Figure 1: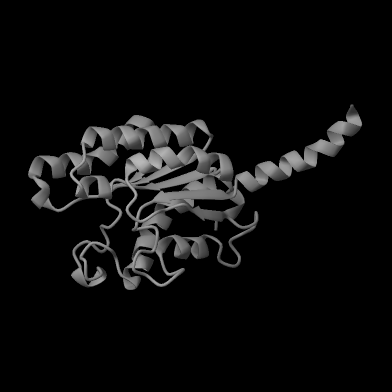
Figure 2: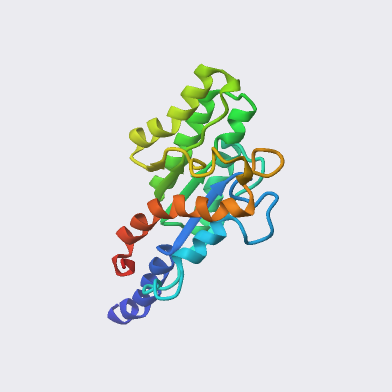
Length: 213
């Protein structure tokens, strides 16, 4: 019995260590590098920032970007269980909801879908970072206001970490958007990365104190 314990313990420890290095990103075109050269999006830049030389004392943090252009929260709900099973992340970044609003979908459904995703990730043992979005006022003052508050309210309800408005650093600068006026340019990606990194870094440190500078 003792021999079996000695033989099985190291693999179990190794598996746990690997799982605690996985970060899963569930997003839409804003995270899927829509209209950008490959590996120029904020998720890839975040990967490089987190894993820059001298900052990986516990080994590399592994980013799994499962984002899909055009994704809605309903699509995210359907895909998340498989992603959690496959990658076993200790941290999940959710960047969804914008496509729901642009299509005028039910705010109740959007809220319920995001809540389901957050709770599913938390139930798996993962921390959650929810990236809030806003929409133009032409969708109606009431809808616009409620959509903006939705992310903050979910953070308070579920205890997940939230960023109020993911695009805040670039929203007022039209030059930071592609011709469609919706998708950020290559030049905007470092600013988006820094927005997420400022909040993500302490979350990583809470699990891996050795990474603290």
